[in-house]
Image (cartoon, rainbow over all chains, first blue to last red):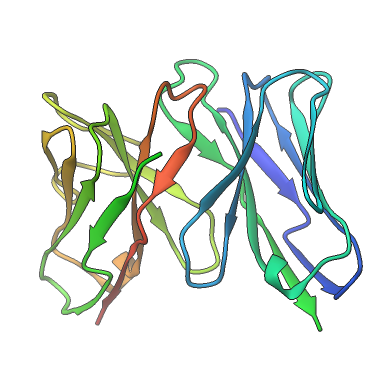
Length: 112
Length: 116
């Protein structure tokens, strides 16, 4: 079945360092979404990418959608302690668009 | 956007009992989803609750264990039946505004269940 994978599973960075998480789907995606879940919180939508090769920025966060629409990345420049949390990528099931499949997430820890 | 109220926020339950989680949305939505998130894990879809029809369950989840109601377009409940310690988890209600293949998911704050 369709799978969404993410690496790394965990990342510990010093505050001010950059961080990148990578997402790969076993199938082509119509779109990819990124969510952030703070410790003890619920997932919150960050962004959606739709077009092949699309790049979007939100302040220190840069999101990319691969040319083949099967992979994506999230890059955070100069991490801050407020970036702590788990970042999930997600995409609709390609056969029927009746569910969203989440990747396993990358847990980011920022050391002050 | 959508604002989702979910309750209880947390509960401690005894083995063998059942608990019903409520999810209230501030707008009418077609599709509502129930997810389970075990500690340190990703989100696993339990079922899709559609108003006016039976819920659609994902592989590994059955109606007898997780009965779902969807009486209208703003409300749903998930019951965790005959609980065991393996059911200890966070249960999340989610909705999509617009089409699933283009819209974003909004989540309730989750119900953290501990089964003793």
